[in-house]
Image (cartoon, rainbow, N blue to C red; front, side, top):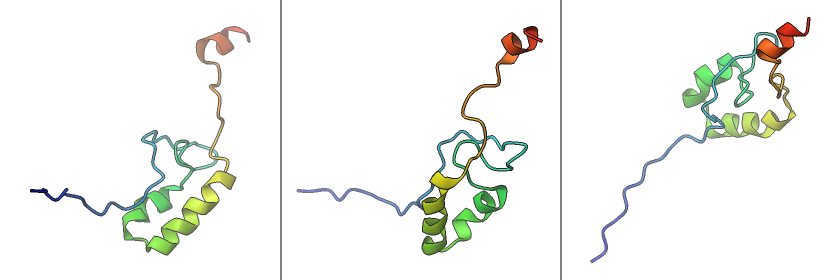
Length: 76
């Protein structure tokens, strides 16, 4: 006897659980979405979410490397 597997419909999201908004670009450094996009995400149509997901690779959310921390400050 086969037991059906329980599934649920999740909203597709580019979130990678690194939620830090870059102070200059105002984009999340994890997923590159704006605060407005993140806030409205669950209320957007699938087409609107797909359009945003398609343009995320073109966005520069912020620096991809660390700024240097203590070592960089000591070099000054």
